[in-house]
Image 1 (tube, rainbow, N blue to C red):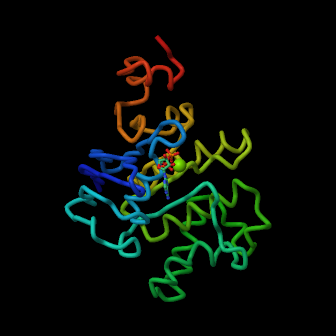
Image 2 (tube, rainbow, N blue to C red):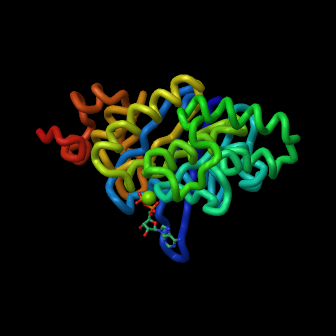
Length: 237
Ligand code: ADP
Ligand code: MG
């Protein structure tokens, strides 16, 4: 479903870091939120998942206004750069945890976990603990856990930042495959222009709390709206 931020404003104490930001993530697309460190990408993501209260504006999931809905009552899946898997639980228990919280019965949980494990290609490792997995495998588990409740939107905050170069390449393609196969609406926060170019349907470029351009990757590369965008994409005038 469409995710729509209207006139989103966020302050930390006296400092306004985001003012009147408008952004629509279209149903089924992967939108990359790209910009330098400190420009407000994570703050925007936290507003969508409900970790942060909004100081102004409205947020809609499809037809529903969720501005005042608590984060527990929003159906969002999140993956951060530190995957924060539960170390004492097996892979299967990690993936199924959101369903246990929801009160699903054991049999339906097991079916859902097996299906998700297959999607992210982690099936042989269901009985292991996170510490017995590689970084890429741990990230697959985090993705499966984020997707198991079939969320309205998948939020990825620098998900590849902790991986070495080879794994990063592999997981770029994998995250994109999983997003396409599930058809889920997704936001990828990144400061890496190559990652944004290669993984997304559209890129929104942020500069100091504002979105300065939204376009498909090649269109943005070929027709940057400003020197900032051009420089950031590595295609300076
Ligand atoms: P990005 O994810 O693009 O690197 P952030 O959204 O984390 O940027 O931060 C945007 C701005 O808000 C930065 O100037 C940052 O210092 C500030 N900021 C973020 N979180 C907090 C916080 N909890 N308290 C105060 N300032 C914050
Ligand atoms: Mg951030």
